[in-house]
Amino acid sequence: MNVPFIDFREQYHAIKDKVDAGLKKVFEDGSFILGPQEKAFEEEFARYCEAQYAVGVNSGTDALYLALLALDIGPGDEVIVPTFTFIATALCVSYTGARPVFVDIEDRTYNIDPARFKAAVTRKTKAVIPVHIYGQPANMDEINAIAQKHKIAVVEDACQAHGATYNGKKAGSLGEVSCFSFYPTKSLGAFGDGGMVVTSDKNIYEKMFMLRDYGRKGRYDHKIQGYNSRLDTVQAVVLSAKLPLLDEWNRMRNGVAASYCKLLENESGIKVPVIQKDRTHVFQTFAVRLSNRDKICEAMQKSGAGVLIHYPIPLHLQEAYAELGYKKGDFPVAEQLCREILSLPMFPHMKKDQVEYVCDTLRGLVEKKL
Ligand SMILES: *Cc1c(COP(=O)(O)O)cnc(C)c1O
Image 1 (tube, protein in one colour):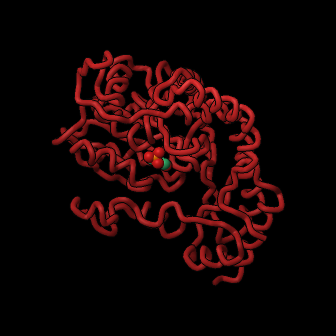
Image 2 (cartoon, rainbow, N blue to C red):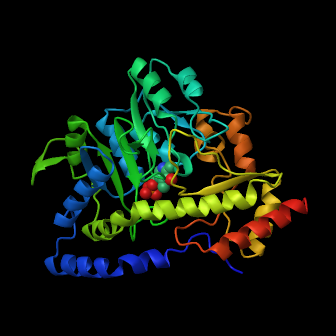
């Protein structure tokens, strides 16, 4: 059997009619950039996140970058980032001229360790970027308390956590400013690049609004040196069609995750994800830990089970960040996780026999002790 890592065909069929009609209107009206459908989607997404404002931008990376600029972060500043995440979480800091300061993660959730964050704070620290890795929110109460005490801004990287909750509150409402990606493989994905900044802070909102559109207030009245980073109307139409289905798709992902856990959790040698009681997980990614990951990964792929590794190298050991002078052994929890983690196929409409095939294959390989 061949099980793809992601198969979104059924999601597409569920929204096709709405998308076709919506796109036809955009094409006929010609309102391709920041059209009325984009404005409408910003409002829908802000409401979904239980926040006041949302500003569409052209990627999750730009959402993070412009959010940091809106907070006046730049050269001489430090921003604390978990070392176990996608590199965009750190690149956005580097773009501003500030320095990313990496810290280790919790062994249970793979999210930033609040104690490590606290220990890394200096006089130069201006912000922390907790990442809700794989779709489970970080420990936001502790992070917000530490940040408040040291007057540090909290920028949520919610690029993997559309719809996740922490103490009943939605991702997108858990920090000063929150950033989302609509890259096609995210749980709310566009048909191209897209992103969103969400906030309930009016000042940040007003600055973001200018930053993403050449710094303008009026048509040719430029208040600041802004950027060209906007969400296309075409993508907004697709995202508006998908948003009403997101909660149901997240429930379906949780159903797939529950089946995986049931079939794998009793196998010694396989560690399944742990969901903390005070939060919900949206399983953008379902990942297990294995001691012999590399050989098993290769054998799984050969058997037609579309597995991937998120992520094989922590950021502090990436060549791109050699200049910061970190070395092997600096963040042992993340380094060990990078050796053990394996992402299994995950999409809302995954079938029972597909889940079973992946689990049977994985259990067989683990028992063979490759
Ligand atoms: C996807 C992702 C990003 C970047 O989003 P893009 O839209 O691809 O620029 C940033 N952070 C995390 C954690 C992500 O998963």
